Length: 269
Ligand code: ADP
Ligand code: MG
Image (cartoon, rainbow, N blue to C red):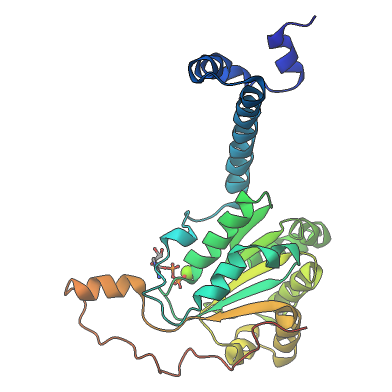
């Protein structure tokens, strides 16, 4: 018979189960576990270790700017967000269906926080995730085109099941950049989810892309299967400062029209 150590090695259980085998056995005899309970504990140890390792590597690959979770998001502060919609998104059905999420609103209202939190959820569920600012995406695509490897680059960017594109609209795009962006959205269309954040409302997208026709095409692809969250209200960060008396500008009013995009159906087919 093969020695237990050797067997665990062959089964590739040396990192997790084997390394904790002594303490598992000790625990089992102390707790007087039966065979079935012991086996369950042992396999759970192995599975937990593997899951944790996989998650860590997916989070590393994701290149998130920082890690924030949905649990850390204060919904009582952000009244414009429908808690139920976010809970729905957290169930990750949108990822399974390859649908998109668009988070709109002024700076500081938690767009990136929510996008990162959903990305973390997806990574926990075993999906491949990638975070990029829109600015970086555009320069990546432009460089790939110059170096004659655009197709390969676009292909690579279709692999992540969830692609977060942060901060669309801070910088306008040239026509060429916008058309590269369209090609990416088109490639990912109905295959993989894109979470996009922007401080601009949909009606200002023509300006961002420098071309109404491209803007319409992008919106069409992006919103066909999508959920849009319109976040209004004031910056979370400013709120704290204001409370502490460090900032004295008046709070933005809820009904201020500046960042309220045209109503778009939450989900459409
Ligand atoms: P945006 O991307 O909309 O500009 P961020 O997501 O970067 O805003 O949020 C700014 C900071 O405030 C982040 O540290 C974020 O975690 C925090 N924050 C924003 N809204 C909330 C909230 N409702 N609850 C908890 N933290 C929040
Ligand atoms: Mg942000």
